[in-house]
Image 1 (cartoon, each protein chain N blue to C red):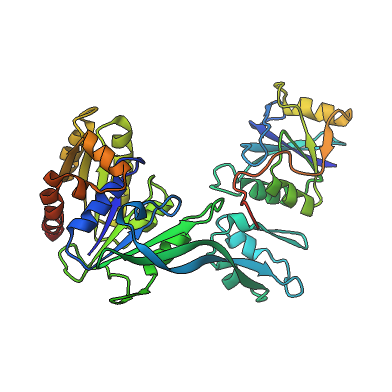
Image 2: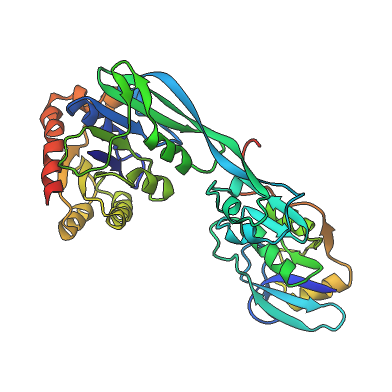
Length: 126
Length: 297
C-alpha cells in the first residue's frame, strides 16, 4: 500500500508536519518495500482551497492512505471522493516520517472518516 | 469625476470625510458606501432607502450525465472550488468567485450556473440631490467584491429621474460627481472600490499603523494609475512618519483635522464634521477645487 505523510523536509527522517493542506512536502512510503520518495505540496502558498488542492495532488500520486495531524472539511470530502483513507498521527510529539510510518504499521494510528475541524471559510448557510 | 476615499487602517475617518465632502460639494451627486461588510455612511447622510436589489454570484452545477470527468474545470479554477476525483465531481461553493471560467472551458457543456444570493444593494435619496446607495454583504459570506462591483454599476430610479453610474473621466471633468466610501484594508474590496476612480483621497492618522497602511494603499493607487492626495486626521498626535512619507513621495496633503473633542461628540451623534464645526466648512468646500488642480497635472 502507498501512503502519504505530511512532512516538512526532504527525507524520511524529516519532521512530521501535522498540517495537511499547508505541509511543505509529502513523503510517499510503500508499506511493503519501505521505498520512499518526496513530493512538494503545490498547495503550500495557495490563497485558498489548500486542502482540496493537496488532496487532488496526492490522489494523482496514486496513494491509498494519508497520514497527517488534521484534516479540514474540504480536504476530507476530496480525499473521501478519491477513496483515500485518512489517519491521524499525534501532534504533541516531535516525530519523523519514519517514526510515523512505524506507528502506522503497528496499528497505533487511528483512522478517521470525517474532518477533524471546521473549515476556515465556511458559510453560515448553504 | 469619481472620488474614492480609502485609508488602509480602519477608523481613520474615511466615512467622516466622505460624508462631509458630500455635503460640501455641488449637487447633484452620487454617493456609494462600498464598505459592504459594515456600511455606516447612512448614519450620517440619513437617506430614505426605497430601492433594493439582491446580488448573487453564479455557482457551477455539473450535469453528471454529460460530464466526462476530464478535469479541465478543476484545472482552470484559480480558487480550487472544483475537484474532479476519478468519476466524481465536487464543488465547493464557498470558494467560488463566480468568474464563470469552468462553464466556458467545459468541452461537454456539462456545467450550468445557479445564482447564490450573497448580499443586497439599497438606494434612495439623502437630502435633495444626494443619490445614495450602499451594498450589504450577508453575514458569513466571504466575498465582498461582487457586491461592490454591482453597486458601482447600479442604476436606480429617483424623484429626479433615473440615477445612472457616473462615467470615469478625469478629475477636471464636470460631468457629475460620484463619491465612493471604501472599506478599510488593502485587499480586493479596496482595489474594486478604487478601480475606475479618477482620484483617491487617502485618510490617515500620524501613527505607525496609519503610516504602514497608507503606504500599502498608495501602492494600490500607483498600480491602478489613480492620482491621490492625503488627509491627516487627528493631526498633531503621534509621529512625523506620515508627513515625511508624503513629502518624499510627492503626495499632496489636502487637509489636516486636529483631534478635537467636539468632532468626536458630533460624529457619535450622527452629525458630520461639515455641519458640526463651521471652521471646517471652507476646507471641505475647497477640497474639490484642490483635487481638480492636482488632476490637471
